[in-house]
Structures are given as structure tokens and as C-alpha cells.
Image (cartoon, rainbow, N blue to C red):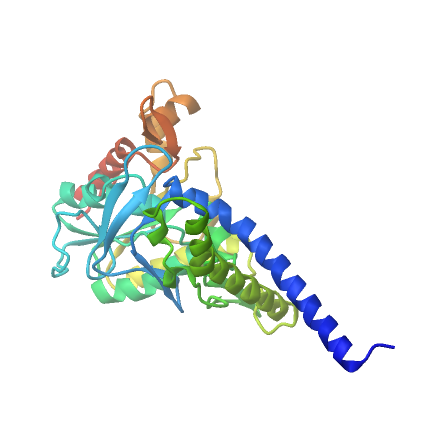
Length: 370
């Protein structure tokens, strides 16, 4: 019969085995991200985003960094003192004046893969002689967009609010986590109780913005370097995320945390109706802009059902109308991001040429309806 000391020793031994096994699994998981950092894959270089209890994460005001790709040079980017995207040459601090355009969306509005001065928010402002605010944030969904609209529209009372519609924005709005290259980035999400929508806060805060991940982009690759990366960044991230993800799943199962809910049509209609109401209350005109690399989709029709006299600009249609021939191959050739020699597709976000065409359609309408 085992003594108490033997039982304790055995229990400690088993705990040690489990911990070592778990750390081995984490090391394997972290190695893929380590490889991506070293090859400068698609992502970010520099500290330009920060965790936030309400939005999940936000741009860091008055910051600059780079967008990175697997092929080609890094692309410089900057945020002003409000956290809005601006060209590098633009003053970081400036007064917001009218007439004013406010653009709300995700990376398609932000203009990932293009310089700020090549994006449709900036180009539209230049073409119409109006100040423009690019409030697009990469990886955001409808929940963050509505929260941002509630904050920015009353504050600035813009003349026009251009709101992006893309089918994936709903998917992110009912997911607890935002798209991320590494680690969990919890997001606000829609929940429904007694036919009433509300936005639940992120179930926990991300740790990736607090760790020295970017440091290892510049260090010499090797076993010692990976070991340092693992213990300083990889292991803390994975251990944090695994623990809090498990706790979140338990909270959902026990009804301590509200379940994401709401069908696509209902959530989309709620969001765009709420933004439309905000615009009317603040003497702003809303433009509903369809942009999703998908001309055939009719999903937007239910999103705007019941919204009176709403201006709709179908950027997808405008882009395809400018193609000859109108084929998927030609669409990709002209409107995707290409880099390298020979050029290869590195991203399916709109190219500078696509942004110019979108800006043309927006500018024509705004100039006629100022």
C-alpha cells in the first residue's frame, strides 16, 4: 500500500509530465508564428495597436509602423493623434473641420496594402475639397463599427458618413474573436435577449499587445533565439489564451457569458438602421457602400430593408463595370495587391487602382449633393 508521501510524489510527477507535455505542444504551435515573423509574412511591424476593454483593440494614437507581406517591401503607415489613418506627411495633430467626410469600416476602408494617400477615403476628401476621416480598422466587424459610429458621429457631426458593407462583417460580429495572425484577440459581439439586440464586451483582453513579439523580427534566427521568443512571447500568449478561452467556453456553457446570437439579416439591418438614425440625429447623410469582391451577392438587400431614402453606392458593381474583359482573372489582375518580380498576388484587398475608381464614384455623388 502506497504511503502518503508516495502518493504526493506521484501526483507531483504526473503534474510535471503534463506541464512538460503542454509546453512541448505550445513550442510546436509557437514555431509556426516564429517562422512567419522571421520571413516577414503578412502582418504588422511596429507597435501600432493596443488592447481595449470595449473594442477588443484600437489603433494607438500618434503611432507609425509598417504593413508587411511575404513578398515585396514593407508599406509604411501612420495614425494621427485621434487614431485615424493618415499619410506619413500629414500633421499628426490638427483640428477637425467641416465640411467633413467620415468613413467607417474594416481593412477595406482602412486600405490595407495601399498608402494612405492612395485610399478612397483620402482621395474622396481631396476630390471634393472636404476633410476626410479614415476610421477604418483592420479586422473589425459590425459590433465595433456600430460602437465607433455611436462615438464619432455625435462628436464630429460630419456632412457625410460612408459606411462599408461586406458580408464578412456580420461573421465577425457574432464571433468572440477577431481575425489575428497570432494569439487570441477577443472582440465585442452581438447577443439577443427578448428580441432586443445588445453588444456584449470582449470576454477577456488580449495579451499579444503587451509582449515583445516585434523584437524578434530583427534578431538572428537560431535555437537560442527561438527559445527566448518562446519564453518571452510564445508561451505567455498561448498559456494566457488557452486558459481564458477555456474559461470563456465554461462561462458560455454555464450561461455566465451571453451567447453570440442573431441571424445575418436581423443583425445587419439593426446595425445599418442604427447608424442611419445617428446620422439623422446629427444632420449627417449616410452612404451605404457595398464593397466585398462579390458582384453576384444580393445579401445587402435585407441589410437596408426599411431604411428610407438611403443612398447606396455599389462599389463592387462600379469596379466590375470598369473591366474589359469582365472576368475573375482581369478583376484580380487590376484590383488585387501584387508585389515582387515577377509580380504575384500577395493580398486580395483593393489595389490603388480600385481605390481610385471607388473614390470617383463617391466623389461624383458627393459633389452633386453637397
